[in-house]
Amino acid sequence: MSLTLGLLLVAFGSALGQEQPAPGVNLLRGDSRVIEAGRQSYRQHCAECHGEEAVNPIAEAPDLRRLDSFCRRLKDPALQTHCRDDVDRYYLRSVNEGKVRAGVVHMPPWEGRLSPDEIWSIRNFIESRPRPTPAR
Image (cartoon, rainbow, N blue to C red; front, side):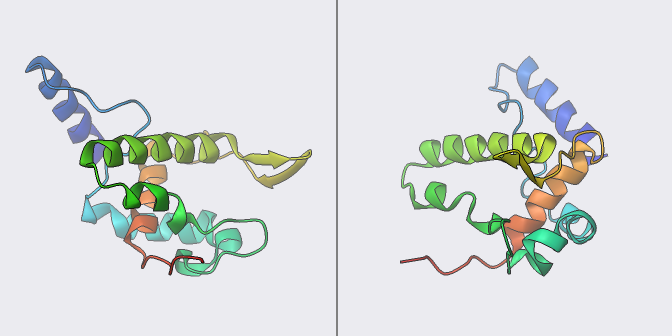
């Protein structure tokens, strides 16, 4: 339902001449109602490798809370938004296609197994987690 509402808002904004969000960006960002659904999907599909509650990554799985750490350091709001949108596209591509290095599957592709709403609710859950302390 949230995705449908988001798409209607995008279409309405387009009709008014407003800029549409770039494809592949998180249209559910900021919707606190999807965080709990994201937590459940994360626990079911991601926690085994990325750690419970997204705070203790293990093995080859990175700390997903750090995905947009560079973006958060940018001072210009427009650049920060553009950077975050790039990270969203990277995240979506990584989830859909999985990760293979040197012929070894480190993360399976989730395309067709997770809906777009599940993918973005997981991202919202991750973004709701406490930020890690910066590495020095």
